[in-house]
Length: 359
Image 1 (cartoon, one colour):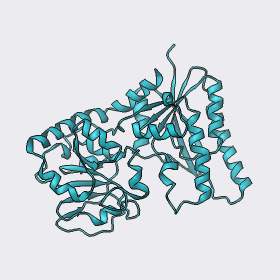
Image 2 (spheres, one colour):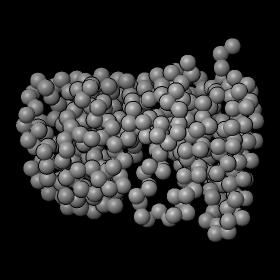
Image 3 (cartoon, helix red, strand yellow):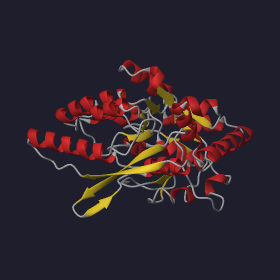
Image 4 (tube, one colour):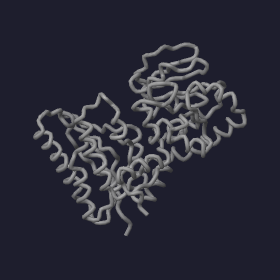
C-alpha cells in the first residue's frame, strides 16, 4: 500500500485573527506537495508571548508540544509527515515529539529553509539566551527526522560535523519558484544593456553592500527598505508582492550577494552564503535571467556547472568580467537559465528530493 503523505501547515493566531506567516518559499513547498496529492495537517498556534518567567516560558513550550501532539494523533504507521524547518513557532520539546513519531513507525522529512544557529552565532544583537535556546532546539530536533532535505553539499557537510548522519540527508540543489502561466516574462526578453537586478530586502542592516555599489555598472533595485540614492547608474523600482515581482524584473543579470560590503560577502548574512541557497537565485532563474554571484557562495558551483551565469570575488570585478562575456556566451547563459526556469517553475527540484527521501 502506498504511503499517505502529509505536510504540516502552521497557522499563527494573534488575538482573534489567524494567519499563515509563511513567505513564498514555504507556500511554494506546500503547493508543490499538494499537487503531489499530499494532504495538510493544520496546526493552530497562539503566537508566543514575551514572558520573562522561566516557568511560564516552559509552560508555553509544553503547551505547543500538546497542540502538535494532538494535531498529529491521526497519523498511522507507515505515514509520511513533511515539516518545513525551522518551525514558525519553535518549541524545545520538538525533538521529543519526533522521537515519539519514530516509535510509531511514522517517517518524518524536514525541508530546511534556514539554519538559525549558523546564521545568528555572530549576531551581537541576538541575546545569549536566544542563542542557547536555538542550540537546544535546532540540531537535536534535526537529528530526530528520518530524512532531511538540505540546500546543497556545503550545508550537508556542516550538518555532518554537527553529528547528523550523511545517510539521512538529501540535497535540494535549488529552491523552486512557482509562477503562474501567462504572457512571456520581461526577463525572457533580451536586455539591451548589462544592467544588473538586485531584488529583496534592501535594508542597510542586511545588505550594506547595496549602499556602496560600483559606479561603472548599472543596477536596478527592487524591494523594501531602500534608503539610498538614485541616479543614472542606480534605479529604484519600488517593491512588489513575490507573486507579481517576476512580471516587473528587467535586466541582463540577477545579483546574488549578501553582507555589509561590495568587496566580498562578509558579516552575518554574507558568510551565510557559503552554505545557503538564497531564494532570489530561484527568482532570477524562474525569470530566465542569468546569475552573478560570489565565487565562494554555495550556489556558485550550481551556476558554473549549469553555465547560468558568472562568479566574482568582488562587485568591483563585474564590469571587467562582463566585458569578457561574448554575445554567444551570454546567449548560452540565457538559454541555460531558461532550461532551469522550466524546472523551478514546475517544482522539479523539491519533487526529486522528496522522491529520493522516500526511497
